[in-house]
Amino acid sequence: MQPTLEQQLAGLMYLAPAALRRRYAELFGEPSRTGNKAWLIKRIAWRLQSLAAGDLSERARRRAAELANDADLRLSPPRTSLSAASTAEAPRASGQRADDGRLPGPGTVLTRRYKGRSLQVRILEHGFECAGVVYPSLSAVAKAITGSHCNGYLFFRLTRKGATS
Image (cartoon, rainbow, N blue to C red; front, side, top):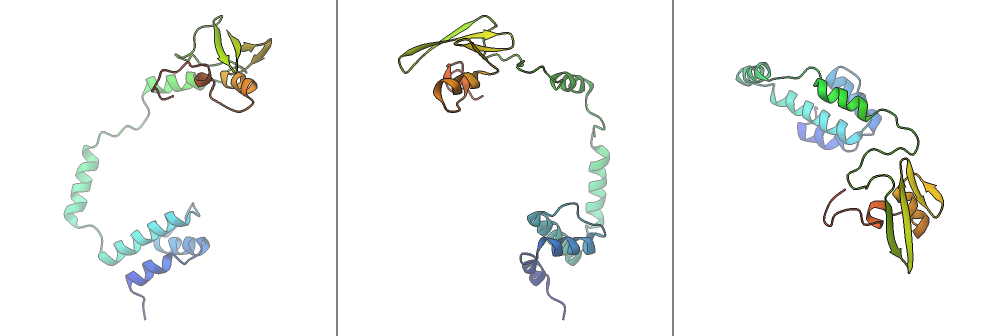
């Protein structure tokens, strides 16, 4: 006796990922490229339901074809974003930072009172100097001062109140 659709769908939850992959290959005619159990269950359930309920109506197929033909599909990325992405992702020298609007220019000295001490950090072209030691980031300076990790921009109060960074 053939199990009903509901029984088949309920049984998917109890199958191991290897069994789900075999079932996927049976239903789709190709092996699955993933072993993600939740994804396999969803795809197999969709396929079982579509086979049981039948395929799309001819009217729905025509409408889908109309929408696909009318769609303004981009086949390649825009040239401006391609060139911007290549320059933005160019490797930077160690310690070099991207321009950040929150950070004043090189040569500026940041002053902060912390536990009764006045701390001064000089912004360099490629790093931050505090007490004669050069750090690669403000967070590294804040960690050296506090002993625990914290956001350097927040520690030195360089973010606007309510701003998300």
